[in-house]
Length: 292
View (spheres, rainbow, N blue to C red):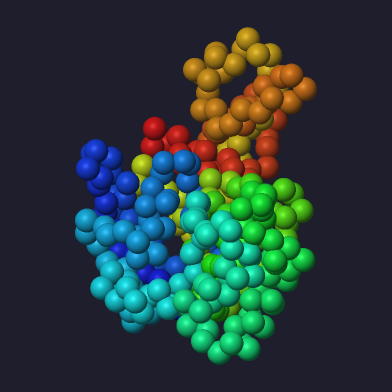
């Protein structure tokens, strides 16, 4: 069964005057949906609002026929949420803590809950550490436990905010595979500033910056918009300022001690420039810089 989350004209301004959300409208269907933006773009504010933890100033959110802003208890029964930072009882074991969370999520049958907890700990590669207190977990282990608590209870809407922070490459790949598997059965919103996360996982996406939606659609369509418009060149360090003044520099990487530039230009650039195959990072930085 396909589900739909519809966000309409959502706005939020904090007391300090920062406009975190500015008439945000998005439609998200079942599958993996990437919410891409730099730090401070408004992603976490949107995630907390979707998770019923914060009120917007205006706007509407509907999950199928459920009014997210008015029917919070119904939404919470369908929700899995992994915030950037989450609290736990540090002296409890992973197994006991997850058992407690499963009970809160409505798995009241003791045998079913025991099986669900064991299965989930195996999925996130924590089963062998299930009796250890959470206080001794490494950052990566804590993040994997956070994933387990978000997934327990078979949510229909899963929100994960910067989920790969603190994960080593092997754990990150394991997490990718897990998200790809569960993303076929529910709405999964992946909020991140890491472009690779969206490129590898998401069939649809949005870019948000300064509280505004700059793009929504498929990653491959975004990349296609840049075909024939990205040029690359390697320069000396002392040339960088001149190039940044003269050209629309999308990104700069230091390779072999020399700046390696990607430049946006509608027409071909001559000289030492060569055409570059665009990627989602090029599109992301092009959109972000257009608002600055």
